[in-house]
Amino acid sequence: MRIMGLDVGSKTVGIAVSDPFGWTAQGVEIIRINEDDEEFGFDRLSELVKEYQVTKFVVGLPKNMNNTIGPRAEASMAYGDKIKELFNLPVDYQDERLTTVQAERMLVEQADTTRAKRKKVIDKVAAVMILQNYLDRTGNKF
Figure 1 (cartoon, rainbow, N blue to C red):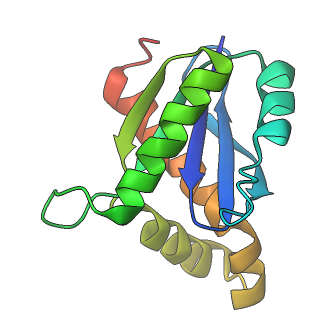
Figure 2: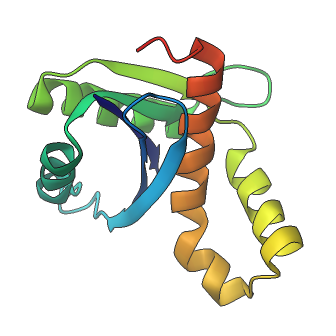
């Protein structure tokens, strides 16, 4: 039983999974998507769901700073609706305001990562933060 965390962007989806006990989140990969061609990375996502035996999704919800739902959050919710339909698994949402900013700050301060390297991993790190925040908030109650 694992939970998959998703950081849904306009060009990529960062992927993280929980350990089998639901205590920690680990980064997996970044899937490239193309909204114009309606290629949302679902084939690769399906492979990962099977590989990790995923039982639930947590999608980052990028609310506006005033707690309203804007276009990016609506797009994330639409992605969540689609994966719920495709995989017949529950989908929860985790407020992800400032998660990408926190992930970038962490990479700069702790890892002293170059801008080019940060760009390649930032969505995966954000997915880890989204999932870890969810696991901490729910007390590991899947």
